[in-house]
Image (cartoon, rainbow, N blue to C red):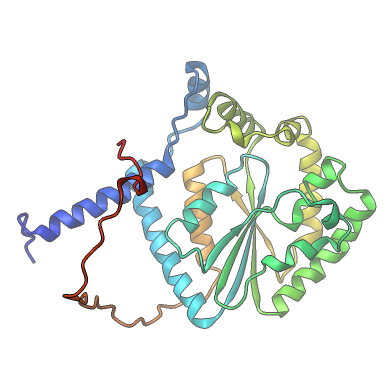
Length: 305
């Protein structure tokens, strides 16, 4: 079929595409306000990544598949939990944003819990995570999870060795219980090198838009890199169970890490297309006796832009 360039529908389609690209570019801004020296070091440390156009094409393809997964989860009342763990600045938040970008927040939600309160510290360790688990037809993404105990809490001394040992004894059975209850549990570890983390921290320090991402705990993670490595290795050894294995995502290349993780996530579920009823827009009802009220100017947000 030949496309008519004068067709108003083509103008609308082009406008929609530009809006989509604007949204993607806003999310994908990756050239922070860095010093010339840091930019030079960053470019030398990173081989060329995917071309932006190729990356967007692949990302949109995967996001369309995520919508099909979402429809299947809702239709079949499936329950999915996806855990994202990894060192600070490894890219967990970035992939979560791309997963949720085009999905329904009533179906797919992200859980990123703060440090436990004094009351929560006296509870059963898993208790504060349980209320966030999905009901039928929901997907929950944990941006860090109960594995805090095996990582930051252990390394920073917020948990005793006895508490850590109890955790390692309990977590396999806890996750088996989740799986037996019908929850599909997937666990990802985002892996980056020592030099890559150092570079990302420097970028955050020099980028006013990203400084909020740095905390005293993040800075301590640089000092205790090897302690985190040993903690991670034991965590894998003791919690990599057949019912909920770990999957490692190579994260030095952010774009490839996002695409690889989403692609792999989609392979973990036997989802299929769901038939939906055609949507038709009903005609607006006009009431000849109704006269629209003129609202005062002070109710409106000032038009500054």
